[in-house]
Length: 306
Image (cartoon, rainbow, N blue to C red; front, side, top):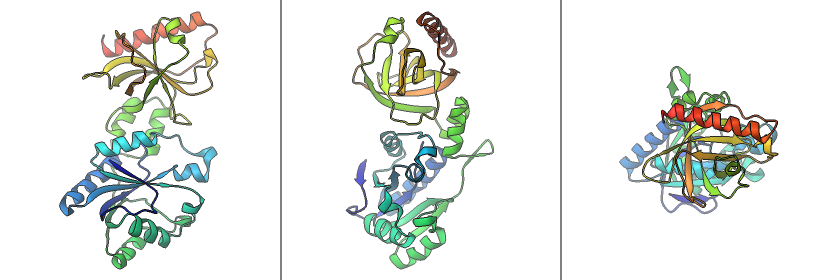
């Protein structure tokens, strides 16, 4: 995928464009991206996405912004899997937030993205004060030579698919509901780094991944599948949180892989959360922690029928 940072330098050729935050790249996003790929194939134009970094709500209200479901890298990887070949990531700062709806259309969509066909979600608003809507885009398209369509909502089991619904499912520990909304298990990617070796001292060596999601969309102990270390996914048990028993303060993902003994430092792995075992908790001492880790591993093995 080709990634453009900002809209000051235009893309090299006209595009079919989808706009959104695409946090989580859930089934609603996937339907929109499928339509994007369809129109791009018919027109011979590159299927392109316009997104923002940070999330606009992180800019306007950082203290109350929702937890990120995906980092920028994870989002771009998922978009590429959906057939997107180009992405323009606009820094959402004071200058960008101040653009009027007309300025957004002219500077970003027409000059920057060279849009010929635009696809948006049914709730998309844009420009300073969220003054821009579908009708304004249609009128601008007639002036500037692009067409516009809006995608309706996608529902699963009667529930509208949204990033907010995914966050609610994850926070509640309902990994099945989250997977149904996402179209796959919830995933965190990252590079395996050296840790403090506490897991090894407790008899459960772990692959450690520093977490950039802040705040975390969920915490706890999970049955997981890890991809990126061979042809088949590897089962394991993982703790996602700050590790209060050992005085942790920064989020960390620790994964213990079953029946696995290889040096994987530096490897980039994908951790799929398939079942929640319990919430993260503080234990009075290492012996209690060790006993609980053993119980967690046994529960995860039972989940996978190992």
